Image (tube, rainbow, N blue to C red; front, side, top):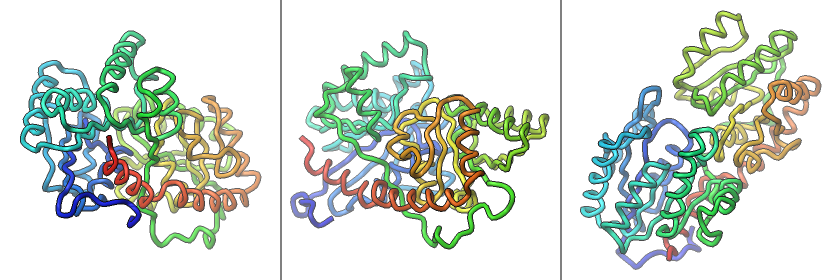
Amino acid sequence: MNHIKSPTQGRRIRILRIVTRMNVGGPAVQITNLLENLQPEWFEQRLLYGKCEKGEEDFLLIQNLNYVASKQITTLHRSLNLLCDIRAFFSICREIISFKPEIVHTHMSKAGLLGRLSAILFSPKSKIVHTYHGLIFDGYFDNRKVRVLKTIERILSKKTNVIIAVGSHTRHTLIQERIAQPQKILVINPGIVTPVNIDIRSRNFATQNKINVLWVGRMTKIKRPDRLLDIVRIVNRDNLDFTFRVAGNGPELNELQKISELENLPVAYLGTVKDIDFEFQNCDLVISTSDNEGVPLSLIQAQFHGKPVVSTNVGSVSDIISHGKNGYLTTLEPEEFVKCMLKFSDNREQLRQMGEYARDRAEISFSLLQFIEKYQEMYLNIK
């Protein structure tokens, strides 16, 4: 990182980082990586985060992380509640006035609204950064609410100095929907710590009769675990050589477990998994069934572990998966998923070949070092 010009000797740039909640998922991992890896001699960071709701799990608690310069705002959460939102707004305002940040960086929609508005009103000299970890214009709200959200985002973007998009599709949509001007948008792909002690070239892929398939994600409607069940039903009906493991928790979990047990489907539900690297290492294939995604961290993790992916072609998934090279992009139809999966069943050497390509590409495109360098350069040169 020596090529990046450091700030004035002895002075640290104060960054106030505000996130709606630190629930288990990609945004929490990225924020944690920033908190732990930005140069401490250059940056002083403080984290404000909201409360997880029912069916969500707090990443900080699960990982036993306790940052001194962090504070939870219990009235800040994902769902709309006018009284709580007003209280959260004034709590953020007080923190901004106290900390006097040079940069206010917001993550997720609710924090993006309240945090940026607080900075505009109470810290007009602060530079404002907002990260779109994904877009909520598809699959989350009805058309009327979506129009209101787009209008709010357009207004806030005018006062935002830098907008971070986690993938090329997110950037394209922000421009297409006139949310922000192209020159304000910077694409920074997620970066993760490279898993250690992995040698995919020495591993025997799918040496037994069954190909082990892993699904990782929050068990919510937008992730379409019901589509996963339809895939499992086809596999079960046709007696195909696949078994399934599902890692993740959420409001849909109990219902899916009941259905799977009732229909005697070959799927194991693991709930929240602390050592997700173990699951990636011991599977053969990873699938993603979502209707909407940003740049899903689980698919990046799969790549680092040298595992091919079959995924719906949504969001910025195509930034990770090159069709036919490290996996397959498919339609939303379960039958199409199974057709892609069968390509591996018919040619198991393809698991190894695609896995090697996946690992090599991940190290180039999604390294933690590259992720941190891009953020540091942005913070140091923000205008």
